[in-house]
Image (cartoon, rainbow, N blue to C red):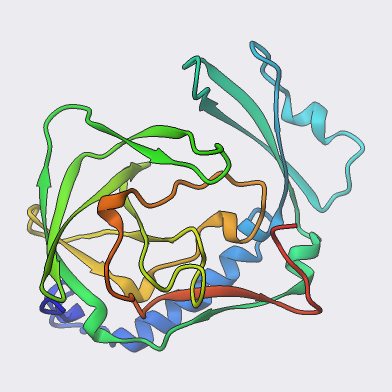
Length: 248
């Protein structure tokens, strides 16, 4: 594997953070977020309006239980390029929340905290990402730069897309479909004070939203984001009680 970097390289040396404690805090926050009233487990329906219509969340919420929250969303229609509008329905008392136990994870491993080179690409470059519910179709996502690193002697150039100002890496590895979620995992890329360097802490790799609700349409790893060796770090799979399956 490539040379690991310690958290002390990117935090204030006067106030060092213990990586294992930081990971424990991240795990606790993940659990809180997943089980919140509008967390991944709470999404029970995504409803798209007919072309040209903009739905009203307040109207849709009428007569629904107090546990339900309704929010709006929009996307670009894959074929026509037109903007589509929709509603999402979140239930704080969703069966997935009531049956949820935890997300299983690998033990924290400092060897999977990797430093990489980041090279911005001028212009609005987009790369096609296949999405899990598009029946083999793809959607273009903005990838503002290249992330290069060497892992286990093999060079990679990874494509992380812009997720509201943060770089989000969708990656795959041989653990997918067995130990970890089948469609790959997500990882937020950590920037450093050096604009040309980023940190990939695979201990914080996480199951994508579609692993908790079948109402999401998650991007899948493109070929360049697939590692040849098992990435035995980060989250594995959600665990539910009583045989419940979130992807019903």
